[in-house]
Image 1 (cartoon, rainbow, N blue to C red):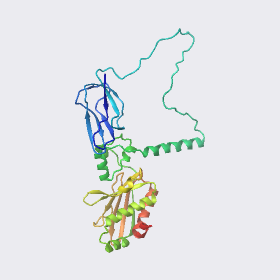
Image 2: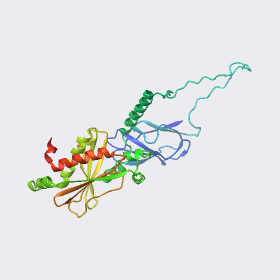
Image 3: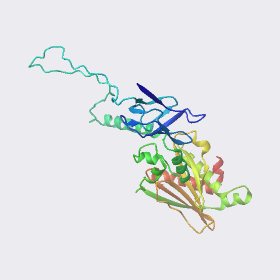
Image 4: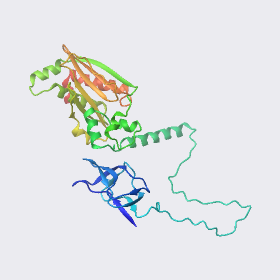
Length: 326
């Protein structure tokens, strides 16, 4: 006799949850009260205990899968007889001819595999286009990560998609944030623009904040250059504290969101800040009546030509804020 293990409801408004990890393997002994598996909801990650003693005879949901509440996850059996398999009839129905080869007919239930000659340029182009489409579809899927990892990544201005691109298995945990090696394609570009227009805005309006203006101009410049990509700006002050400046209203409209960390150094003697990491970072400093803007980026995230377009557009808006209204 088997006992069904189903996805529990762990919150009032919970419809689904992610199976993060199984603590037992198929065939292992399970005691009542043993931690059986770990699940993650939008608000928490927790362990679920076994409600019955027996053997974990079948796991029906893989780690990393998001399933609805009440769905069957596994079976616990009274005895360890292995997974349920049908008996195979090996009886030979008739005599075998000694010189006649025996052919076994197998019904292939697997995915059909198409083997083609790709010698022609048109076939190669079609194959490349198909692979690119599959990559874009995979890149747009939801990233699975624990609440702690999501919160820490947002505070750090870290893009969790980098962990996926590095081949680290999902769901991601807090400890995975330190597993990504620094990119060898790290670059920084600088520009100097007049600070006259921004300083005039701040003098005329008591409510105008320099960091907020930098953030708004950054967001609009990005949206102008990359129409298909949304952006969220994380402001990092000189004390190391970070908070989300913009992007909450944009994130929900796009599956592709890029995080940019903004650092205002105008009240210091520093001229720029380079991270040397995989993140996008913009630093602003001021000397006399000029801003120095430094964009640090990984070419795995942003190509050099795109970085130039973005920084050039940002500079145009800083020198002529009327572009922000167009």
